[in-house]
Image (cartoon, rainbow, N blue to C red; front, side):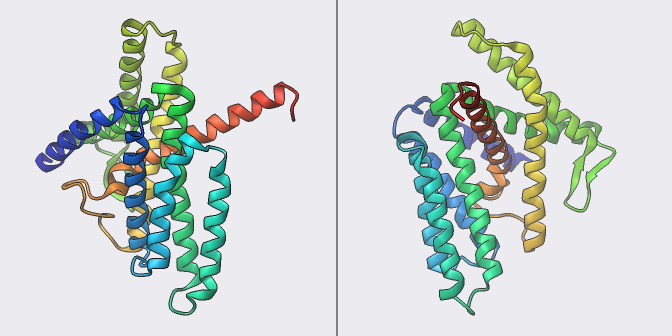
Length: 273
């Protein structure tokens, strides 16, 4: 636990300056690097890291997508299709050295990674500093769930996937997310004189926290299936980028879906569709 706390403190101290420069190119560069490392970790977990045609191209693809979110958002879908077509071609050119199942599993995982990190920058571009709620939700949920589980945990949540997680910890995580959203909203309201709806924020925090915890369990399921304990060793006590950002990525993807859904509804109401 001591190692986890020290690592989290150092990582947060290093990441906060990135948030202050989120309007500069520093932001997509850092998010892109995290995305590239996460893609390498997923490809490694699936046993395809030695195939440079998969690992290197996937890392480049994931590094590029946060830049698309800022400078050419409409190009993301086209880039995803191009990457998918490339991976499908590898099913032919790498056969039988690499199985089609392994290649497609890598493609699906990498597209998820790219979409999640793309979403962080895309939501920043659309809603300015509200994108911070993605991190607040995931990290407050995770922190509160850990301590709540240790203090009150009695009933196992998903023993086959994560033996230490409990129902009490899950509930504590939701409470942590609600408190995090409340503090952030108060700061926006009182310090920056921004008009915010407290009730809406709190109602968003609850399902967002559940999404965060589902993301953590999904990552655990993949690790169990691949027979690994952690995706990487970048963060001592935490593992790799996928271990530390799994919940963030799931919340980001959910937020991205909501953002596009809201855009489609708006377009429909305007009579364009």
